[in-house]
Amino acid sequence: MGHSRRKLDLTGQRYGKLMVLGPAPNIGSRTAWRCRCDCGRETVVQSGRLRSGHTSSCGCLGTGAVPGVGLPGLTYVDGTCVEMLKAKTVRKNNTSGVPGVDWLPSKQRWRATICFKGKRYYLGSYDLFEDAVKARKYAEENLHDKFLREFAQGPAAGNTAAQG
Figure 1 (cartoon, helix red, strand yellow):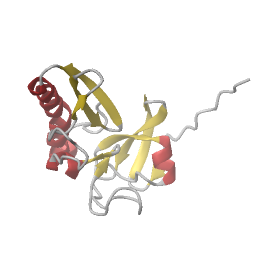
Figure 2 (cartoon, one colour; figure 1 turned 120 degrees about the vertical axis):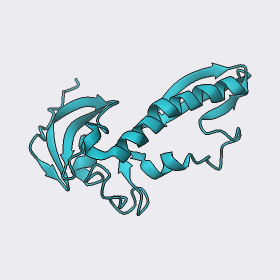
Figure 3 (cartoon, rainbow, N blue to C red; figure 1 turned 90 degrees about the horizontal axis):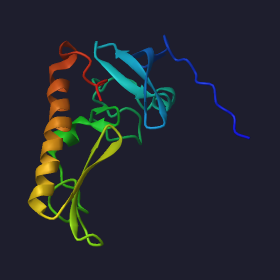
């Protein structure tokens, strides 16, 4: 039969610039930890990313972390690339011209989604393209733009990266 794995307690351990403060709510099915960076900012990081070295700061290093993970010179916080959010890039395979909005031929409707901190959020399906765009823009303001404002303010803004 199945056996339960015992959760490692990483509290008090250091990973790069991050000191583990204690457990945080899981990120999906992954165990996560509340950490304080040497710069003063707090962030929540998955166990695997800490232990593998993929995440070694709150993103303040701006070096892209480990070779092969992300791109050099980019800042990652909980799997979210700060520069990509700022640029509001439209992917090459996007057919609608608006990030996170695509046509569902089987349902003859427009779908709106947004990705943030490693999760995809379903924002609904719509008869009108404009309504799907409106839902996406609203989610961008409340997730991406809010995150970018708090990130720019730094540790004085509070526990920015740990908020979900």
